[in-house]
Length: 570
Image (cartoon, rainbow, N blue to C red):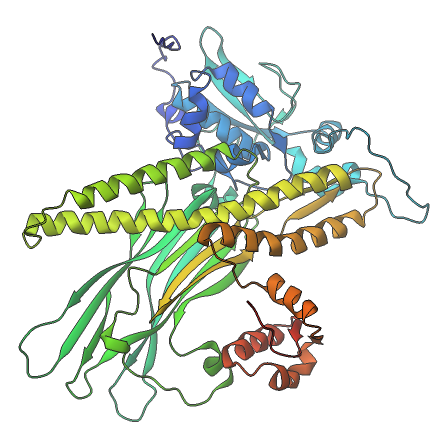
């Protein structure tokens, strides 16, 4: 037999604002992972408070991780922890609102000190000349901690009650901060200005055969989307294209038309943002052909102070980075067999992780659900009528299965990024314990999984576009430990990238770490190239694309390490 228990129903007074039981971008009361976690304690409000109290504190400004990111990472600043607790409470039918105020210096220092739990058995020697860290007296960190958020919930039999989860020793009703008087206290939703933002756009380039004698390349942006960082935290954003192809029969001039409708989709949400359709027309009619030659996706991350970081990732480029950067004759010809620029086999997924993966069970649950979805899609495909797939009903059903299959395949691809992050975060926890350095993220990590079909081959890559962590050294430890931790993390992540790709594909991937290891075995020297040594690329990089990427890095002020001879990879 099975038994279930339910929390007693609660009658909410008519005087309570309905906004206090409504979800927001930051406090998402419909998040599946949050609901799954809440089911373990039958949505009990006190149990929810006690759960969030066990989470670690990270000092950063604004709403970054929201409900899912804070839950997955089991950590966050005071605002993100408040958002998660509010989501848990509102999902249980408990009215809840944000409280905002200021901590005094002593309370702020207590909060900062909670970042450095006592390590048992740690020992070492610090020379007297070594500069020691003193984060508890760092003015910037104190200011971040003093800007404090907590929760007020309308609890059964108690009425409005303060809940401050950032202080592990806090009890129901405790208030550590002086409430704000500027209108930011006791609010249902935080101001948009406090949210970190993610902006994405797809840019395409197309070639037109008219007029004669010109390069005839033009660009456009058919798809843009803007999100609060909390909306995509611990989620994958998919770039996909709905594709229709038209090949009219019996015409004097041969014509093939492909129409693409790009979209961004967020896994776990019903959100899909469709862009403007664009098309390729390959025809033997003189000067009438036009087709897509390249596509790029641009990410802009903006923090709560308005500081932005922008980077662009190639989706596909038929011309090549070397020709674009260094010039030369552009040889543009119609795609082989009039194939579409973006095919079903192409996949582009970005994981946004402003948090560590402190609890892997959520990602594992998503993987299990995804495997179940793939089995269901296979069964649906098998059930399609075998005798006639030309009816409108069968075509619609087959198209929906194909679309859902593309989404599922892309999400399966995104697990590679989560695998990498989990390995990296396990190392980060070890570094925190052994080096006494707190590593955390104050903006989203962006881990891009990219699969491209190029005629008879397929390329699968992981791009660690933004994995820079903040490092705060524990009181009394050498400040230089921060650099050591960052260096170890960076080196290790190059190997974790190999491991994640190998596990996903079953093949040994070609990565920077593998190339350098092979170069050492083959006794091939490395040359260190600085921006002032651009001419050295002519000696060591005969491949035009490799040359182009290296030149782009040098022109951006970076340095490049290059093997002096070709490296043989088994």
